Length: 192
Image 1 (cartoon, one colour):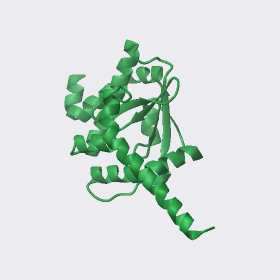
Image 2 (tube, helix red, strand yellow):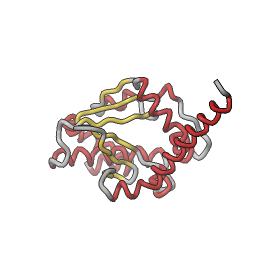
Image 3 (cartoon, one colour):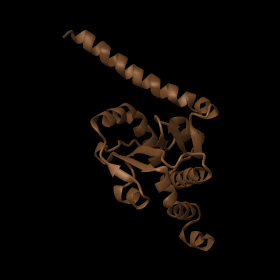
Image 4 (cartoon, rainbow, N blue to C red):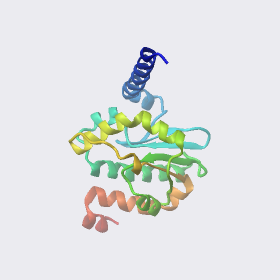
């Protein structure tokens, strides 16, 4: 195989991935305005992922820059608030109870997610490939949160999913967690 062709192909591939990530950043406001992204907290949104499926996201680069500074506490609070908001939409009939919510994460443990009713598994090969396409952006976002250059440990990547009606069944846990992250433990107990 021609080395020049190999290098050119690799550069085109890297260029396409970078162009897609930049385009995603700048199209975030448009996709939100069009309703393709449905936000439930400043850093949490759902997007359609096929029939009766939605994918959960904790923000794009646009969201991180718009809501700067972002801390791990901010992300956890918005995740809990966002999931509680999704549960409310299921109760109101905006989201069908049989809808499956799915996501990819590397920073939450399987045990934590299972406490809230999520089913957890390792990614399939195609899902690892999709994560690999996002890897640079994910490392940049994690670096923004930690305040230093940081790589994501791909061994921690897991896939999570939950039916919307199961999320509703665990909404009281989500609301309690959101209050605790917002106000601290003592104030959350008093507000409950």
